[in-house]
Image (cartoon, rainbow, N blue to C red; front, side, top):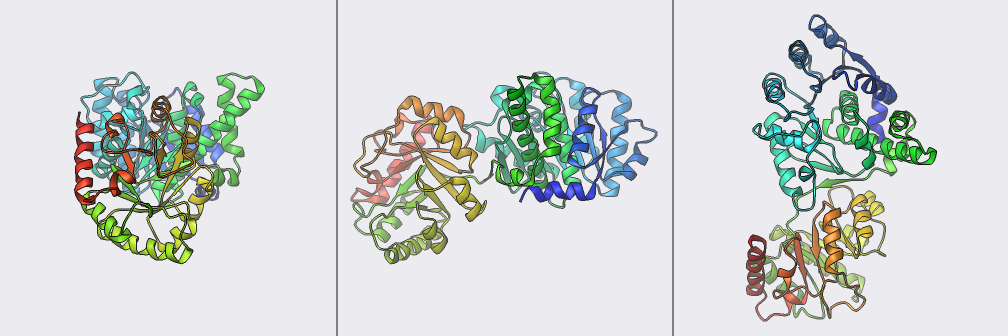
Length: 479
């Protein structure tokens, strides 16, 4: 899938005009050559418009500013807009000085950009120009994490809407979004941040990819995946040869050149993000529920925000009939129906997603079958499982059992310490499960939702019980 975007670059060999900074100009040229593009570096006001006439994309990088270069950027950008070729902005260190803020505001006011690529701190400054950054580096607290992800994505989608462009943010977890869709990319290695200019190189690469595709969003995602995979490969080579970071830069460029299509397609670690309301996650249990359809209706009326159909013992025909009925009920309430374990049942009843355990199949393989728009939840019991599930494309994690539970005999208890470690190491939503009820959910204020079985359905008035639990969740989260 993703290799097709790289192969379009190779086939087109686009000319990418870079007005970039002198710290990384050579690396940007080499990364473009390695990807199959043709770089041209020109920032003299007397020639930039003519160079744009030759180009298939324009990349503007504000890393080393001066007044004459800014005038060249404006002239080139306006010419590129007239020609209808993509324009990419890298607002390097935009919050470091008032001058940089002024320049970026002017560029955004006078040029229509196809892509804005930077780190999260830089993009937060563009959202609110009163903010500052520490040089060209992102603040640690701006990094995507489990607590801020939904808010940051919504904020960046608003920015994408405001400027009618794609927002591309590199970090420990990358984010690429337009006003409608968002992708999280997990490829790469932390040591890439130790090499000067990897961000600038990535911006140049984005320019090449979007110049060869009509789908700017997916082309940008593909360029991020390629850069991340090349970084992983470069680190492996550096480790094997006991080399340093200067050599890793060369390995990185070599990795872009030698990256195989099958690696780009099969080792891509990404997620098409969708916002999920996991506050009150109900799970069916035929041993507790008196009437599946009636009890489900009551739970949804009471405020269940996601429902999982779990049925281990019934015949296939019964499971299919029940799942189809529940799917219709859930759609009436605009609540996702998640199928426990069974890919066949998911496909047969066309539910919203699937939840799997550690021994119910490979998340990456299931994702390749059901596509990017379906939900996958994964049960995890430790940090390693959680990180692996995230990288394989899980939309959310079910962590537990947190408390003693009578609804599942083979539970593995998860400690509070392990839960906190998981929350610190993933960005996707986390739901706690296993013995969760009205009385103990306040022990877990930092999670995104609570999965209940008997805590919901072992009640004489399920609707009122769910309303009571929803109110309690609100109290816990607002405390």
